[in-house]
Length: 118
Image (tube, rainbow, N blue to C red):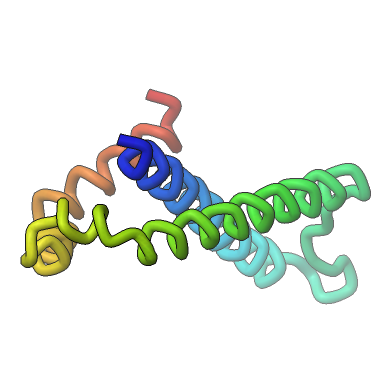
């Protein structure tokens, strides 16, 4: 059961990184729109030193989590008992689930809910 807990931890980190990446894309999109609407003399959107340091801290934290999860994944890959517990078509089933329209719709709905605060 230890492997299942480790896999869940890896999945949570992947979701956290994906959420952060989505936020970065939205921030970049906002920055580009702001910059394009501003007069060229005024420049673009800038971050305060505190905001920049917060982003750097979060980046370091996520890098550490990714390093830890890489080690977990390497241990899982080396574990023969874990491989025996997985159905042979697990990868295909996961890919099919993730690519399904209902999954993508649900993911978009969750994202919209988090952006709207619901």
